[in-house]
Length: 238
Image (cartoon, helix red, strand yellow):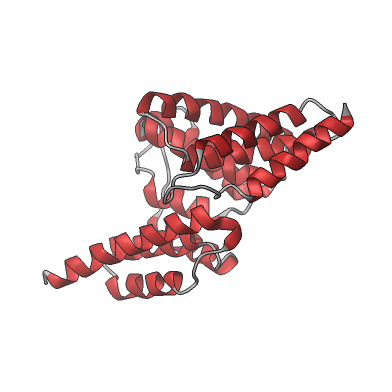
């Protein structure tokens, strides 16, 4: 039993490492993603590797949600499943920063798709803030302050000054993550600080694509370029 589970875990890990294989643009190969999730799920049956397998299963599910194409109905079902899986994993491994990031990200996506006001009323916004604060996840904290609606009495935050602070800290903490450049540049665009935004975009694009994060960085570069076009178009109209 243990040897089979470890074999499943090794196969699943190899799938995760090669998760960008046979990708079509920024869309992952659905068959690869299915094999990866299935192998992690099988490995979870063995207590000797359950923790690692569960972490891998959550990561593979999160990856599939972001990069495998789904129709609208399946996307909703998939997101609900991911929310439940990541919540269970977070309760079991609350000090694992990667699991905390996935949990907070999933809650944010779930709340955004459900309805921001409903998410606030149901406590999703507060949960995202609490999880991100405990795990020092500055990217999630910054994005939460940047994107959540301000609702007097019901919600005492977000705070745009804190969005600026946390997104800058996220970039300083991990300058390899292209999304840190994009999120901060997007905030600078909202602040009408166009030169600063373009500078951040150029810095992000100059980093290139990491081999281990091929699809993630490919999409990050696309977002940076789209924001760059948007800013240049606005400046050309002046």
